[in-house]
Image (tube, rainbow, N blue to C red; front, top):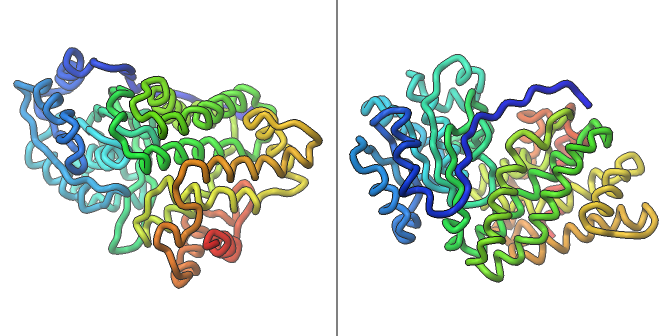
Length: 390
């Protein structure tokens, strides 16, 4: 097990019916001037917007709406102007990962006089400046951003979708599973795949199997997602299903599953290229790519990972060769069972015209040819994209 330092200061408020009694105090501890960020009209249709505004009565509220999936730098720029012009003390992000991701970068951008895209291109700039506290009300189980320092921001002009890290996790995260009852089947499936992909990327790790604590955490959360995602799709108001998925989302990417290991991701960087070029749903893209990546990394050297995953997550029995190959089959079948597209044409990508540019960028930006679990060249990435066409 490698040396590590783990610190996560997010105050988690898990469960239903807590906003009316706890939200104002959670915000007011940081000041009176709050920027409320959110996406489209879903929080107004569900009644959540009214609940939030009632809970914030008496505070000085500014609003930023319209933050899109695969959050765009334009929203961050707009937010930067608002936090500066209104001398905001704290940001309240109400929504899923896109809203919270954008809010974290806006929180840094208050203390930066240049274009906030600079903060995405170079995370070091964010650690050199201050950051506003962010409080969030999570409405989608998917990204884990509610308890980590990361954000992913898109720039349509440059066709880039990049991750950036900041100095702080959200100060307070309200996790009410009942707020996800209204999430569509599409987004429920996509979010579940995103959680599963976070775990998969961390499971296939250069350090192998000496870290049983990490292995047990990941395998347990994987089993949770596999069990409860289909239930949430069938029964959207099932509290236990939504609660398990929401906590799995948070635990999958709050830093604990990667402690003591040497971790470098491959599928996410490749999917970020797809989203940057075609603005597809992130989780669905991950589900399309993951089985082909598993095919790519499978070898005699990596087979023990597949055997462990098969026995401990998919409950497979038999000799190691059979278990290893069936692990990929079971993963592919589970992804397909969530009723989202399993090929790139299924999400509207009908041509390979951008594959060379995407493959080159994925390798260069993320050093897949040097640091990946199994190193990937641009040709390898292109082949993976081509395999995902059918």
